[in-house]
Length: 223
Image (cartoon, rainbow, N blue to C red):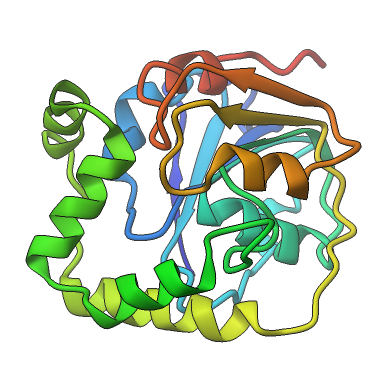
């Protein structure tokens, strides 16, 4: 896993006690999200889940950590935060589940396998179109497209598939779950099945909720 730390432009002290910890989706890096990050706290963006190694040493100084996870990042965060006990003030999951490859609670096994087996430049772009949902949203995404190779994305997806076969029942508790009604990647019906009993809000968005990032990221943590 790669973790990029972005220092805020405004700090409350020499050491900012607040952190936004964002687990992005498959195939991502920091570039699609930089314009949405808050300016009143430090930020960390996690991506590339070919490994789930996570060093918490650099997080020890924070008193308030706001966790947001999207897509495959929901699975990665659920795995990681269930074993690393951090001072999480709020946790939000959007358009993902703790079960990344699951016929009822995640992405259907056949679809996941077909995506992995047929991955190339053309199919990556097709995935991005489905992820964004419209030409306008895709064009906006492509202005800040992740700087990663198809080979890199294939390895990440392969490792996610392998890890998803582990017997795993998460016990990290999410405070809030958002499900996009137009999500074509993690189908809304599967997300609802996965999150039964949780605090769910249905929102009008595609899998990549480009109109919703600013609202999610810029909410302040009240000390």
